[in-house]
Amino acid sequence: MIGYIGRRLLAVVPIVLLATLVTFALIHISPVDPAEAYLTAAHIYPTEEVLAQKRHEFGLDQPLIVQYVHTLGRLVQLDFGTSYLTNQPVWEEIVSRFPATAELALSSILLSIVVSVPLGIAAAVYRNGWIDMLSRIIAYLGASIPQFWLGYLLIFFFAVKLDWLPVEGRGDWTNLVLPTITLSLVLIALYTRLLRASMLDQMQATYVQYGRMRGLHERTIMLRHVLKMALMPLISSIGMNVGRLLTGTIIVEQVFSWPGLGRYFVEAIFNRDIPVIQCYVLLAACLFIICNLLVDLIQLWMDPRISLKGQTEQ
Image (cartoon, rainbow, N blue to C red; front, top):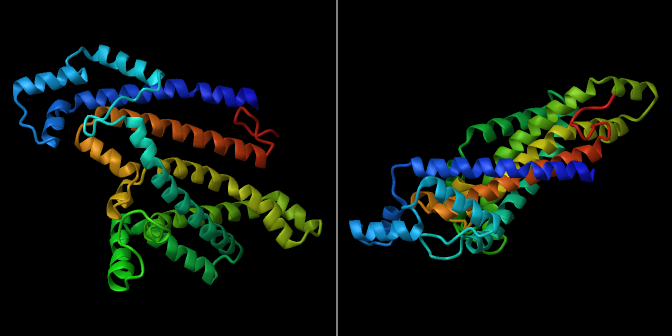
């Protein structure tokens, strides 16, 4: 097990290198000059002299290979540089915004699991019943309603008309309700249908028929055997979504003025803030790798037949 974890962690190195290389290339392919974007954001007229000074200050006047090597050198030392826009250390700004993103991500995942797991089980057990029809309606709504439109709709009814909840910002638990619901609807739709389909597939398996022949109670078969195996693809999906949500939910954070990583990253892109963009991409790559590793370990614990090589032992 330790060797497996070590191999997976070693795989982080080439992935991170590839992520930094692609990010570096895309930044420098863009026709927008970071020095000019910085001066524009600072309301400074970009004369040639001032542009040359800023390019030298940012190291943009050096050859690309030199810039990339310097970037890798700083990353190895966990030095993510200083933001062009705020002149503050990038890592400190990332750390200050990550709790808000993590709070929104975890609350959305928790709500989606609490709703989708019982609904998915009921939809599979009572197939074609009214609960199954309700799960289909929720799935259609979750898949078809854009998140920004749902967010503005919730703001209009619960914040403007009824004045029950705050419109924007981060404060107490009331500020978390509307963005959590906005993010959770699509996840509830996805997880419910995924769990329903997985349970229906497991219910046709041979071990279910064998359990019934042995006289096992139907509830025991469903909860201890069918549900355990049906949760495997759901856990994989949750792991991917946790990684995505922890890197920031750009649309929802923008709609509700949530001070998370998503808004910070968008501002960095608009202002060509290269240190922030590079740090964000590196953080996103690491978070996805860690989430995938945790998902694999959980699945291995739930089903020991899965070998460490990713194959199912017969």
